[in-house]
Image 1 (cartoon, helix red, strand yellow):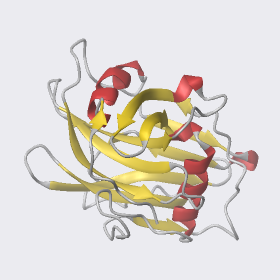
Image 2: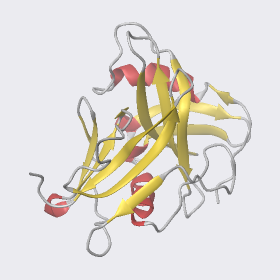
Image 3: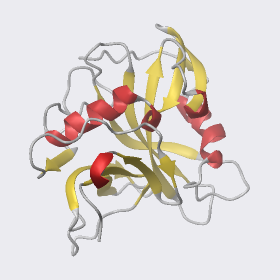
Length: 221
């Protein structure tokens, strides 16, 4: 299990994201700098114990209406070869030293563990406490056998999220802009074969819940 170090980070994760988020096509903010607050998230463990994996949820209140984003991140002790385009930034960790933070959709370690979570082979971990599962993160998988493992890390961003393709029409869709799921509607679209869902805090203190990731297998209608 990953150990959560309660120590200093310079710059902080929110400071890194304040500079990085406006460069994303799914960022809804205007010309002003984002005003970010941590709203939730969870972690996954790297079986090799080398890469930190975190799914951060942050809310930006700089615009007319607050917008909440899902930001999967990996933290590494050295640069990831071939992923310069996915670098969010570097920071100095009070215990581990210099760390390279990446958009996790471009990191095979995160993608592999996300698939394991969808299939139920691993558990989501609490964002802030070591060796503690997060029961608010739910998942499902209804595919035949194991999901494809050959997802590319050549992620495609659009105004709503990020798509990771695999052969034969399978894809992982990460909902970067999070929206609470209406109680009156099904959580999953009919073509989905797997999902990850979770909760986050709204600016008014209410608790929201919605989809984080959807897996589609085969061509979508």
